[in-house]
Amino acid sequence: MIKEINIKDRKAAEQVLSVQLPAYKIEAEIIGYPDLPPLKDSADALRTTGETFFGYFTGEKLCGAISFKEKNDVLDIHRLIVHPEHFRKGIAQKLLNYIGRRPIIKKMIVTTGSKNTPAVAFYLKNGFKEVEMIKINDLLTITAFEKLL
Image (cartoon, rainbow, N blue to C red):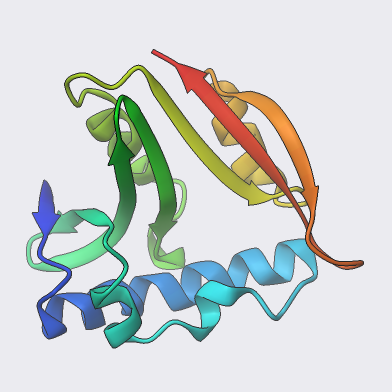
């Protein structure tokens, strides 16, 4: 079941962090960049992001989450995370589909590590187009994607 997460609630933020850290640890391994900023997040940091969070739950257990900010008619995805125990179960797809149905959204945007081939393939498969590659430093490049709705 997908439901909104009150990220300002400390327990909820800790629950999201318990999915985020192992998910981004896998991304860091895939792209060869162990210093990913989301690995440094705390529950308090999540509580103050200003992002809207939705989670995919099995019973009371959070298995995946998506967060975003909306401005005008653009939905900016900030994180799409699935706990590694729940990879390849369609959870990321369900979360993306869920937020894609929000009213008055004309475009979705997202960035991911350019070397994160599973994420890049996921966004391309879902109709996102690559719009820019951004070199953060010598070890990290991110790719920006957009999808017009």
